[in-house]
Amino acid sequence: MAIPAAVMAAVDQLLLERGEYRPIEYLMLDGRLMYPDYEEWRSGGAEALDELLFGDRDEILGILRQAAEYARTLGLVAETVRYTAWGGEDPLPLSRDERLAAVLEEGYVKPPERPQMDLFMDTAGSSLANGVALALGRRDLPEAERCLEALHQADPGNPRLGGLERLVSVAQQAQAVPDDPEAALQRLEGEWLPLADELLGADSRDFLMPLWRVIHQALQEAPFDPARPRCHASYTAMRMRDWAAVVDAVEAVSDWPGQPVLVRRHLRAAEQLRQTESVMADLFRLCWHFPHEAAAVLDQGVLDLPRPWERFNDLEPELPVPQFPAWLLIVRPRMAAWLPEPDDRQPEEYRLLHALQRSLSRDRPGDAKTVQRRARLKELEPDLFHHYVRNL
Image (tube, rainbow, N blue to C red; front, top):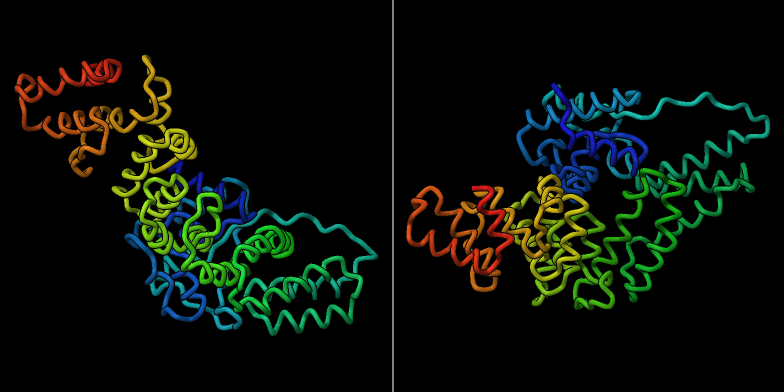
């Protein structure tokens, strides 16, 4: 059986971002595991990881097997991934289903290169520096401090020492809520994030998450300012991958539908939460009011719309982006059955097509209402009507 393109794209994305494939990271990327639930599990707050997953377990097992098969076709080699509680050594349970547990602990990495002999390499110093980095990634601050002190004694000239010292200092202050969240955000993104990416690699995200959390806490009451869109709880919630918190923070802004930045955040969160109707509402809102933003979202890929979007861009005669929602009803008439009934705030051509497509199974082609709606659509948007007729 062929491996779905979506599975291959997700594995490719993980390899690009993290340099390795891990099934749990795949589940978070796919929206089947929320990061706050992952943190709860890593903190020892759940009996087994699979209790926190969204979706059918057999379906998840099949997808992860496909991802592993694709990783093998790329020449990656399997390695066993063990997860322990933050700051501890006890292994965490994955699943009572032995099949799922076996797949969840099988990661894939690039084949190791043959080590180059270097007579001048201080293996003790390198080992201790790696120990500091690993401990920081596991949020084991006492162990990081112990390894850092040993590194000072064994290899004071180690090139990673200064950066690791700064990261340990950051970890020591990670629970303090900043008085100036904007300055803290600038420091996190401009200084700590690139340093953590350099020294901790794939563990950078887990190390930095407590810093995102305290800044998010400091921004809880901050109003949204379009001139400073990052200084808002919806942004920090998005960086924390807490998608429910993103939705709450966006919807707390009374005029959020008129702010394209907030609409895009809301859309992304709804997609991760698998709220298809909300995703479509956000996308259509962008098309009608912020077409350049809509085009950017569609170019990046949303739901299963890449191919319809490509087809839309190749239409002759051409249609403007604000008519994409109406055209989508032409090529996917069944959408009218589950999309909300439009009101006067939506463009008239969209309302006409929604009514036409929803009445397909009820009205005869010569029905008076159908004839009137088609006539009005032809009068209002001739090019759109042309594509409607072609797709009847």
